[in-house]
Image 1 (cartoon, rainbow, N blue to C red):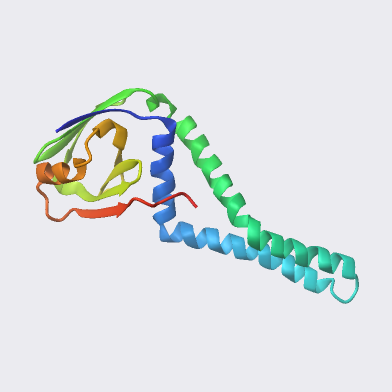
Image 2: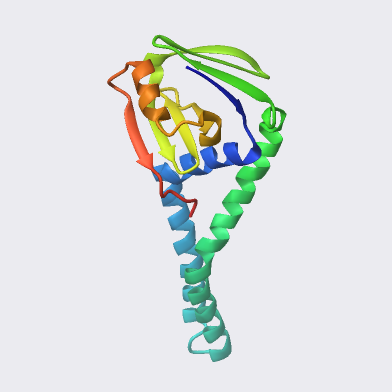
Length: 179
């Protein structure tokens, strides 16, 4: 089964944001920074509580606002960061045609950077979100396949038939969104 893809910036961005959102350490870091920032506002507000009520109310208010709006800012910040990363590090791949040939023994890929062959035994997981398929490898790398490139609603079933590896985990998250 051969797939020809032309990956855009949004395709790479979707893969990076999905991977980041599923990483336990990254989620913990995001939560920790949110709580530390908000907590610092509350602590500073408490420090001013007896001496200057204006500053006290100001910092308590800032703490409440940061509890509510900091996650929105974080989403924007990380998306902007990863978009810049894609432009800087993967910009030479954007808009260039690539070919992925799935076989029973080997996955052969060819793009601007060259050719590579991946043993199908190295495929750890296939993830389906609403717009993409991600083929994650044991090494941590992955292949990004936009659903528009497949043009087949039964692509995942056909891919599993071709790969013929019962150890591949299937993860369908059709409602995943970057948050």
